[in-house]
Image 1: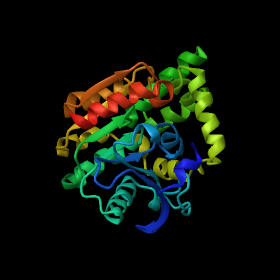
Image 2 (image 1 turned 90 degrees about the horizontal axis):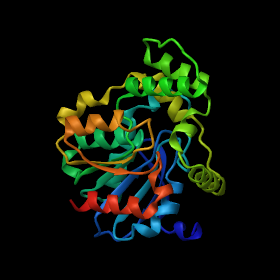
Image 3 (image 1 turned 120 degrees about the vertical axis):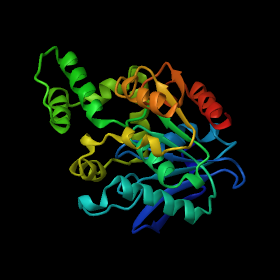
Image 4 (image 1 turned 90 degrees about the vertical axis):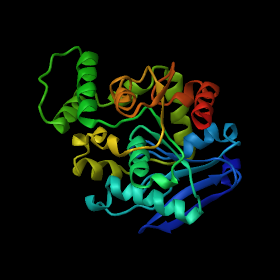
Length: 283
């Protein structure tokens, strides 16, 4: 299966950075561009779902300094939401795509939504999976979860970055615990990550945190988004559900698909995830 993914892979210089993408499917098919979670890559998503999404043209993008894309220097000015959105627009132009649906996972939801806000004429719809959009609230959820897992009562800092640091100080594997209700799903992802040989540099995360990611309240920009929005939520992922998904439901009137899964729902039930994605693409 891994060898089959070689077709359509490219490394191109766009927007001042080398970006890796895999472009699969017919040019005339409905187009999806996948936007992975913070500091990760698109390899495992394509490896698992590529054969199930053959009715679409799917572009799997590794964001700057992530996965197979070129590594930039450790300069926070290079790691902003604006830069990531401009990378996406440069890729769209390079591929000659007129309209598409961004599919944003976790932090990738911010890129998808911000692209829709800035470039509405190129958007059919926005699809987000277990989105992270309100980071001060996310930091509270993380600290509450870490304290519960550690069975400790801890002070809650006013500063959102301090809350996140306190959470990971209590439980350094916190996201792994919260993201994977089924250990088999975590093992599956670890196997694919090992097979890919791709390990994150941390540059994107560090740059975004330096640029006050933990203070980002992206719902403030929701009134400027006019594209239809669809949310696929693994309800066993407390980092995104329900506190993050509620913002999109309440303020953007997004349509919600709830799956019995964690942060990576395609790992736990691929066919159910694909059905939800098909509905979001056809509604």
